[in-house]
Length: 363
Image 1 (tube, rainbow, N blue to C red):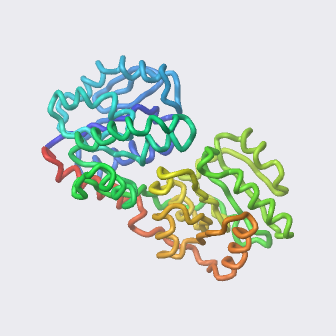
Image 2 (cartoon, one colour):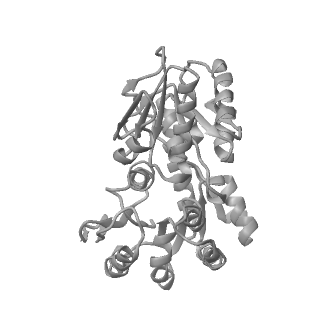
């Protein structure tokens, strides 16, 4: 039977989403589907034990010159990890760009788990000047052409690749981020005051300042509510949301120990990379029984909310209009806890990846 290598440039201990979408998937593919695999990733030190191969990388959460050279030096252990492997599944653009030459040279099959539009995210976040996008589009097309299969997180992303780079749809496999059905640890919903939460990082495309202004408008209108901001960036969150009267900021593993609130903010904005994305925290809200408040900026989020009645989609152009839409819509919400649709489950995600591996040439 063919062996699969999961390869990433990230340190899984410092990127919980990557660990959940990568290491947990690898574990389930082995235990449930009998698909042998091993993992290659960054870590604080270089190690290998036959199943896990790690290379030393000092920086975490960014892709700078230091981390780039750490990856280059990791080629030796990556070569060892490839022994007996037929298929390499690359997570995201950076790992593919750095390590694919050796994989291609050795004639291995490639599954490219793109995780979204990485180059557009760099531009949309302000980390890269837009003048580079023409060159990066050429690189992106090359990555897609070199892949046997490409995993997209949404249909919109697949259509972007098809229309922009003329990639056949048969090569583009849509597999959404999945979430595990886990027991809710605490229920903050149903109280006299509305309970809101904001989960995740404070990057600008999650629009934390708009969330703050939304809450300030609720305050101005005399709406009784509380806001819990659950993030690793606690000091930054305290500064951004300091004007919110009933605020609590803390760090917590929401994915593994979900808390139910009345509503969770899933505001997304920032260019084409966000229009085709799929936020991991969306499913985590649903698992926790929290109704989602979203903008009309992400097609897949809009579809899921409307199909399964998972919350409300707002399309106002001002904070006042957004709050007005929410206050009108909340009266029609059911207090029943929605079950996680199977298409959003971790089991479905693993099922799709297992099927893709088995149909990949050499699988």
